[in-house]
Length: 280
Image (cartoon, rainbow, N blue to C red):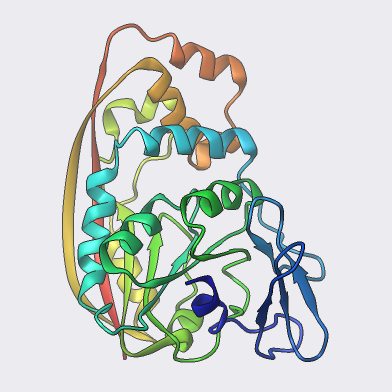
């Protein structure tokens, strides 16, 4: 399965086809001689030059996300994403790109339910360490989604983007005709019960309209589905929830400790929008 994913990859230096070389360690290599060795955890870092200007999630932030997702709090969302992707993953050589794969939990569910080949990308090497363990059959790559993707034209059947950056032009380029882009965003009121106390940002009005507008040049909007998940969280889970997202870059350890010390369960509702787009 990993070799199937590698067949879709292109060298970030010369854009030549990459091949998987097996030896003492796995290596991705192109005919021009550019080599990318696998890390011991199983992912590949394809970033070249100055790398990325974006701040990657830290090891602690990734650990918080892994604990929260592995506890199953967002499992229904992962299933909903897999169901949305299923219709476009019917062909025997179907390929799904998870842009901003994080710990790989969402991609794991898509792959388990579809049997498709997978590529997961994220700028955090700490996230890719987790993703490579969850999805060893996928190509797990350190990459900046804002840069041209190291993937050949018209090779992916589905691109999934769950709370991650979006690069519409590149997504449209790598998708096959008839392929599907699935974007998950939070809706107004998302985790409102705990947002104020954790420093999480509120959801701006008109977010869905702006998403559609940002895609309009390359994609036609399709089905849009709302999903509400009632949560009952312990203090430590509230701390993990706050720390695993963008607010985690700014939270201090004493603030996390204060959240973790909350007594009794905390009720909240996660509110998501699952939006599907077709290449125009």
